[in-house]
Length: 536
Image (cartoon, rainbow, N blue to C red):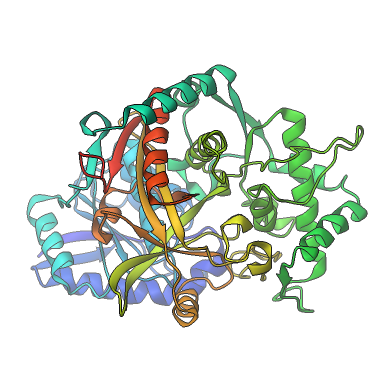
C-alpha cells in the first residue's frame, strides 16, 4: 500500500496538550479511515508519549527531529483538532518536497480550525505549497472529493470566485479620492506601533518584515514584556483601584470566587488594571500610536491575563490614566488601538481603520477576532451561515449590546491562563460591519476586505454557541456577505479577522471602498471578497 505520513502540531503548554489529546485522537481516526478507503495507508510520524500524556509535536526542536525521519518526498498530512504553534512544524514543512495537506475538524470546542488557518497563513508567507481540507465527520462529499483530488493530483482546488482584485472593481471616485488623500497624509505623518515581543505562539504569519511595513509609514518600537512587567511594579494600588472602580461604576460585572487557581479574584483584576495603566504610560513614553502585548511565554508566568487591559485600551470611553510626573491625561479622548497576540498585520489594519473611521465620523473602535467556527442558523425569516467570531477578551465594550452594562468579566480558562485574570465578555450588537485582513504572500503585503453584518441571535442559541466554543470570551455573530463557509476557509490567510462597525450597510460599502483605496495607496495588494465587479 502507498504510505502517507501524518503529523500533529500542538500547543507549547502541557495542560492544553493533555486536555485536547482525546479530541485529536478521535479526529485522526476519522481522517485515517477516509484515506484507507482510497487504498492508502497512514503512518503517524511521532508516537504518543505516556510521560507527557499526549502525542503532539510540542516544540520546534521536537518538530525538527520528527521531520528528520519522514521521507522528504512522501505525501504528508498535518492533522489539527486543536490550537497549535505553527513554528513547531514550520521548519520541517518548509523543506519538505512531497505534497502537503493540512486538515482540521469542523468543531469549535478546541480551536483546530483556528490552528489550521494560522498554519495555512504561515505556509503562505513562507512560500510553501500546500492544500487544505476541513470536515465535521470526514465522510461528506466536499471532504472526500478534495481528498481524492489530493491523493491523485497532489493538490486540492477550492472555489475562490468571490475574490475580485482592486483593478477589476468599479470603485466610486469619491471614495477612492478620499482613501488616497488619507493614505498620503498617514504615510507622511508616520506612526509607531509598540511591539511587546514578536512571534506570539509561533505566529510566523503575524510578523510583518520591517521593509514591507516601512513603505506604509508605520515603524516598530520593539519593547519587551519584561519592560511591561517592570512598569507594572511602579503602578500604585490606589491607581489600580481607581481604574477598577471606574469600570464598576460603568456597570460592568465581575464573576468573582475565592479560589485563585480556578476563580477570578479581585487581586487578579487589580493586576490587570495595573497592566492597563503601565501599557498607556509606556506607549506615551515611546510615542506609540498602537500597541500589541504578547502575553505568552514569560509574562503568563508572572501576571494574570492581559485581555481586560486590551479591551479597555481598544475603547474610546475608558478609565483615565495620567502621567506620573506631569499629571497630564494620556491619550485623552482616544482609544489606544491594541492588536491582540502581537499580530502586526492586525496592528497595521487596526491603526489605519481607527484613524480613517475617525476622519469619516464613524465610531472608530475595532478589534481582531478569531475566525473560530460557525453553522447555519434557521428561523422564520430564513437561514444564514452565521460565524462565531471570538477573541480572548480584547474586544471593546463599544461593540457590545449595552456597552459596559452589557459586559462581564470571567476567569480565563486555567488550561491556557494559569494565573487567571478576567476577560472582557459581551455579545456584539447587531449592525453593519467591514471586515478585513492584512497578510503576507509572494513577498508583499496583501489585503482582503469585505462587508457583513452582525446579527442578534436568541439567547439560547448564543449560550449554546458559547458552550461549544469558549464561554468566557466575547462573541460576535457575523454574516459575511457574498462569501460561503468553504470560500472563506479556502481564501482567508489568518486565524484572525479584523472587524469594525459602520452606521448602516450603505456607509459600510462606502467606507470599505475608501479603506481599500487607502491600503492600495499604502502599497498593499488589495482584493475584495464577496463584492461583485459592479461594487455591489
